[in-house]
Image (cartoon, rainbow, N blue to C red; front, side, top):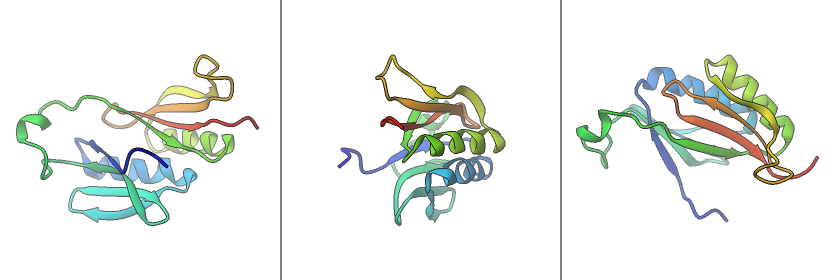
Length: 132
C-alpha cells in the first residue's frame, strides 16, 4: 500500500490543464473522479489520488500562488504499453517531451518510464517497474 493518500498540483490555467490531464492519464485507466470549482481529482476505481487545482485552495495563501514551482509526479502504469500510450496521449494533448518512453537502467534494470511537461512545466511521468 502506498504511503501517500493523494497529491495536489497547483496549475495556472485550470481550463487548459484539466483536458491535458484527462487525455494524458486516460491510457493509464485514470479518470476525473471528482470536481470542485477549479479543482479536479483523478484516480482509478472512484478514488481521487491525484488532484490539480487553480488556487487559492483552503490550504493556500495568495502569496503561495504567485510562483508555481514545477513539481515531479510519477503515475504507476500497468504495462510498458500503457507508458507508451500515456506519452503519446500527453504529447497529443499539448505536453512537451521531457524523456521519451524507454528503459532507465540508471534507476534499475526494469525501470521503463516516459516524461512530459504539462502546461505549467510540471514533470509528469508514467512508469512501469517489471520486465516484459
